[in-house]
Image (tube, rainbow, N blue to C red):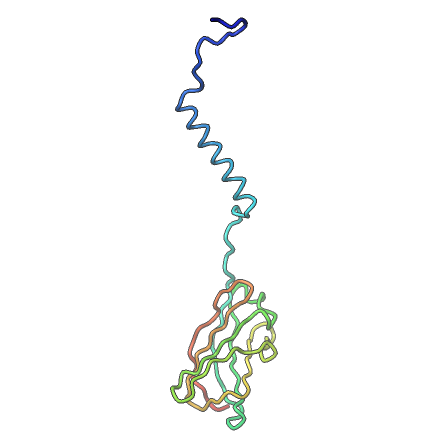
Length: 155
């Protein structure tokens, strides 16, 4: 039985190859939209060029356990390091007799003239010749500015 007004002679749809191509294209478009919403098109952030060098550890008062560490700030982005709260400083005593780890409070960290990082430590026992591991991390990017061992000396 023929239906009047029907111009189709074949009941076939699009060829299977064209159908697969259309489905792949639709999947790519949907993936691009989802990535756009999730922020997947941003390039990764480049780490800043900030380094700390020439570290020194000087004991200012042996009996009160007061000492100071200083580092020179270098690098093309050194001016980005201008706030003590931008850094996280962890020190670890490397001596077996009285080993301890200490997170330095922000109020004991200062940046002088934009080129010198000074860290004051109070109440942690250290003596001339003792070794201390210092890790300084730049909080905004999470990069480690220095991970070194310093030897204490009397000021």
